[in-house]
Image 1 (cartoon, helix red, strand yellow):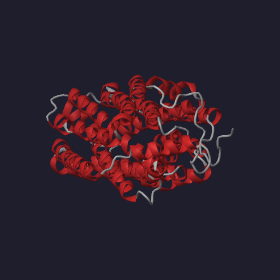
Image 2 (spheres, rainbow, N blue to C red):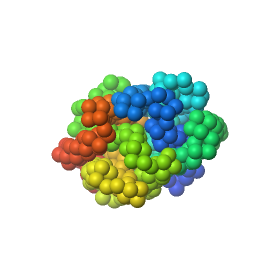
Image 3 (spheres, one colour):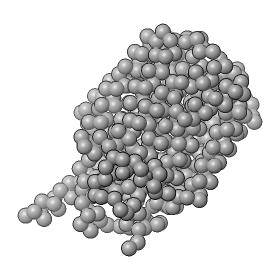
Image 4 (cartoon, one colour):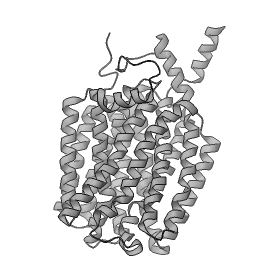
Length: 438
C-alpha cells in the first residue's frame, strides 16, 4: 500500500514541459511582469536624473548609486529567497516579492531628491530577488534536465523582452505625460495584475523538487547522472551551500564570477549607455529604441541559445557570450549614428543571450534538488551583486576619466578575463555530455 502511494505521488509530480504546460506558461507571465517593473526605469531615470533630481552630469558615481543599492539588496535577497523557498514554498516567496514592489512607484513619483530613488531601488531589489528568483526555480522544478536550457532560455526571454517593451513604452509615456506620472501609473498597473495572477493561478512547485529528490535517493531516476558535488549531507546548512557554490567547487565558483562579470556589463548598459547616447544627441525616444534593441535581441535570442546548450553543452555558449558581449561594448565607442549603435546593441544582446540562461542552467545541472534553490540563490547573489560592484567600479572609472568611454573599455576587459576563467576552471555540466561516474 505504501509503495502504491509513493507511485501515485511520483506520477502526480512528473517533470516535463508538456506535462506542466499550464504552470510553465503562468511562470512566463510572472517573469514578464517582473521585467516590466525593472524595464520602466532603464532609459528614463538616467536621462532625467539631472533635470528632475539635480544629479550633476559629471557625478557618475552619485548617478550610479541607485544601481548600487539595487544590486546589493537584490544579491542578498536572491540567496534569502532561495533558502526561504525550501522552507515555506516558491509561491509564498513570489507573492512576498510583489508586495515589496508596491512602494516603488510612489517613492519615485513623490521623490524630492535622488536619495528617494535609491530607496525605491532597494525595494526593486527585493521584488527582483524574490519574484524573478522564484520563476527560475519553479521552472527548473517542473522540467527535465534535458529541457533545462530551453526552460531557462524561455524564462529569461520573457523577462528581458518585457524589459525592452517597458523601455520603449515608458519612453513614449514619459514624452506624453512626463517621467514621474508615466512610471507611477505604469508600475501600479503591472504590480496589481502580477499579484492577482500569481495569487489565483500559480501553483506551488516545491513538491516536484521533493519528488525528484526521492527518485535520486531510491535509484529510480532515469537518464544520465548529474555531477552533484560529493561530501555534503542530504540537507546541508545555509553556510555550507554558500561556501560550496561561492568558493569551494571550481565549476560553481567559475559560474559565479561569470555571473558577476555579466552584471558589471549590464550596469554599464543600464546607466552609462543611455547617458553616452544622450550626450551624443539622441532623444529619450531614440535612446529607448536603441536600449530596446539590446533588450529585445537578448530576450528573443534566448529562445535558441537555451535549447542550443541542451544540445552542445553549457560551457561553450557561456564563453562565446562573454567574449561577444565584450566585442559589442567596444564597438559602441568606435561607431556613430543611431543605426550603428543599434547594431552594436544587437551584438551585445546576442552575447548576453548566449551566456545568461546557460549560466543558470549550468548551476541547476550540478545542484541536488534538495538544495538546488539555495544553490541558485547563491549564484544569483554573486551575479546580481555584480550590479553593485560594477556600478562602483564603473562610476569611479568614469569619474576619474571625466567621461564614460573608459568605462566601456574597462567592462570589455572584465568580460574577456571572465571568459578565460571559465575556459580554464569550469567543467561541462550537462549530465548527458559529462555524466557522473562511479
